[in-house]
Length: 118
Image 1: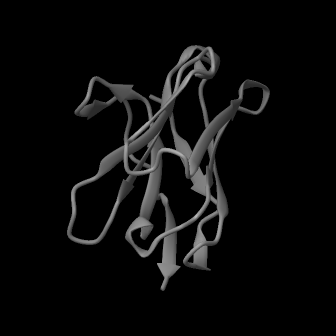
Image 2: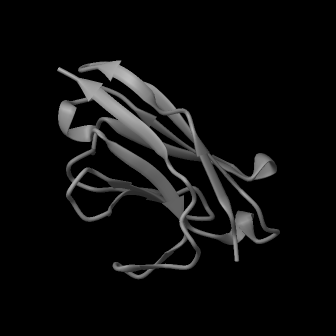
Image 3: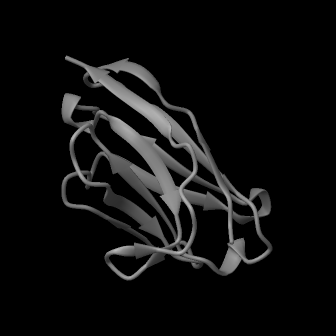
């Protein structure tokens, strides 16, 4: 089991930027694919970006060109740079290890709240 601690969220105006951080426990971090997810009020949690052990990123269509995922294996940390924020990006953001399209490997952390005002 890997534990995640997310941080970096906040209240920003539309068009603004934030950098989210996800610190993971566990010795296998460097070989794991890590993904960022988000859950907006009243909606299901969705995957927004993932990064493989080799650093290859992938993104949901809704965030391509605005979100950038990166990782620092020496710090067991994955980052999500979010730019050109829109009110519809308002959500709690989480990280986890994906297992297929629908499942994750670990329990959810507390997440970090991103609120975008129009």
